[in-house]
Length: 237
Image 1 (cartoon, rainbow, N blue to C red):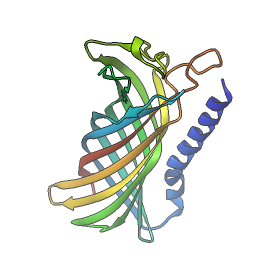
Image 2: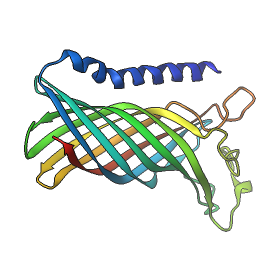
Image 3: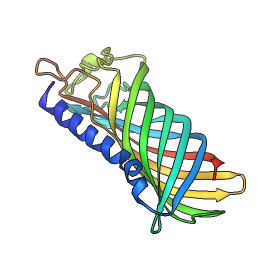
Image 4: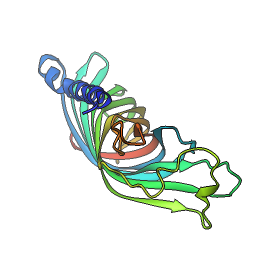
């Protein structure tokens, strides 16, 4: 295991501990809640990949959707505390900016199943209908289920005056992915359920290409900005 991988693993374990902290603290706090809600979510990702050596990129737009379960266990002063877990399909990857005059285009789509485990905090209306400001933060793991290259036709990589070409035709060495994710937004609590409009940012701590000294890429980690809408209905209020 490289030094960078050890550092990333340390950060990941720390985030897991922080994400689970509200569960261990709940027994010590007052004003308990036992609100359990489930539902669905959907949205889009604007993704890039952090490469070393670098590759010039734009944002790749891809879908994300899945299921959400949330348990709110406590109100501490004005802060509503809980935990949230999801299982999502998420499309990531990268879109290259090729500036060699060839007119070539290239992007790679990488489809993952993601499971974020989030500390959930909310501020605002506690009971009944109203609006809350929500924050979610925690670790996320993912598993690559498929990937596909999209090249223009014709394709002229030999005309590239500079920049790497090692990524062409090279698929992921590692399917397991982990990192940290966080975001915030507004929750609208209504008589037919709860609607959450949220923006998120994901930073991958792992690399999908091997990154030892003998390998070309020293870094190949995902990151994305996501926008999503979640619908939850209360199983237990």
